[in-house]
Image (cartoon, rainbow, N blue to C red; front, side):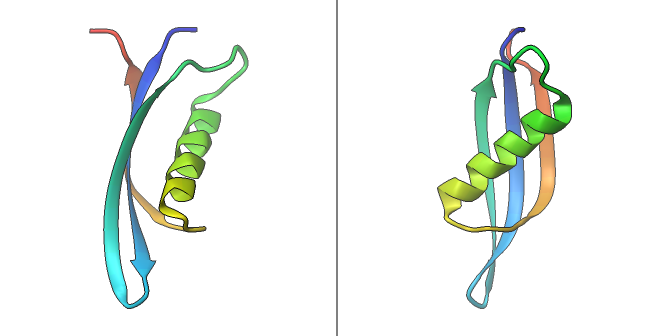
Length: 67
């Protein structure tokens, strides 16, 4: 499979504040991966980076990484 670029924007609560965060990365999906599994992996990665367990997804894009 070819490499894809993803962008995800999430909104989450930090105490009394509401914050937004945008993350991005590239992934080469394994042979039986689906769009859903790539999304779940991107969301899990983002939540781990923020050290939170839940967030609302405001935006998600997955596209081939080649120009």
